[in-house]
Amino acid sequence: MTATQCYQSHEYINEEYRADILDGEDLEELYADAVYPFRCPECDGEFSTLSGLLQHASSHTCEQTLQSGAIGKLLNWVNKQYR
Image (cartoon, rainbow, N blue to C red; front, side, top):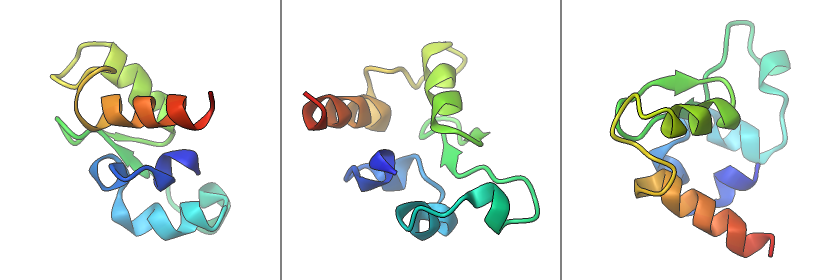
């Protein structure tokens, strides 16, 4: 849910799932089909978990890195929130 609260969340969260995530819903229970609420801001790859998106960003399979763009801003925001 923290990732949804970051001002850059529109860059890496599929909008159709944002409200459900903010409400604390279990997406796998709520939807019958597979759910991919997270997306790479660079290549639009979709992921079922935030950790999957972060692993993708660290793998160098596209231009997105953990330090750049919306993902870099998310990680900076999280660090500031939980210091």
